[in-house]
Image 1 (cartoon, rainbow, N blue to C red):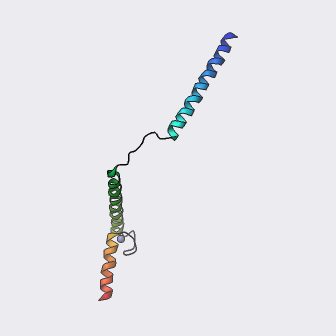
Image 2: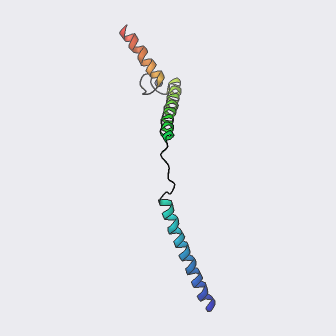
Length: 94
Ligand SMILES: [Zn+2]
């Protein structure tokens, strides 16, 4: 009988530890303690990534254009469509 009593206490203690640890981890994960210093290079990186994204998008759109996946002249941001529109404008003006 005594053994079971001990086991109950031990299990209770373990569950308390577990609960405490869970609460601790929850708080730690909720409040990020990594402080990112405002880096002047960070903005540059942001701008570069935006430029790279634009170039990637334009590359994809150019492939789409090549495969006739969109109508020429209809797609925004597509360099080939811009060219197409400029050419048609020139044709219309003549
Ligand atoms: Zn296009």
